[in-house]
Image 1 (cartoon, rainbow, N blue to C red):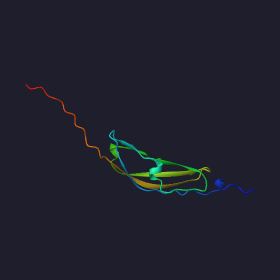
Image 2: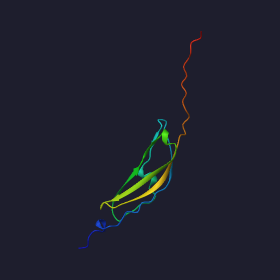
Image 3: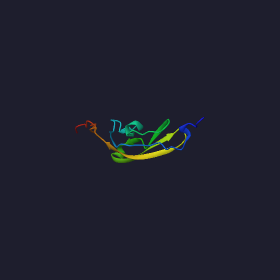
Length: 101
C-alpha cells in the first residue's frame, strides 16, 4: 500500500492578493483569509490564518499582512499582501446648546 500523499513533504502553495477595506462606523474592520487568498492550494486539506486581521482608525493607510497556509502534515507556507484601510465615514459632530448671558 502506498503512503498517502497528504503525509509527504509537499508544502502548500499560498497565493495572496491585495485588498482595500473600509472602516465601519465603529472605526474597525476585520479582514478574512478568503478576502486575501488568491487561489492557494495543497495536495491535501489545509487551513489559513491572517496576521494581522483586525484594523482600526490608527491603521488608516497601507498595512502589511501575512497569509499562512498549514496542511494536515504541519507543512506551512506564507505570502504577504497589502491591506489598504480607508475611513470613508463622515464625522458626527455633537453640539451643545450654550445658555445666553
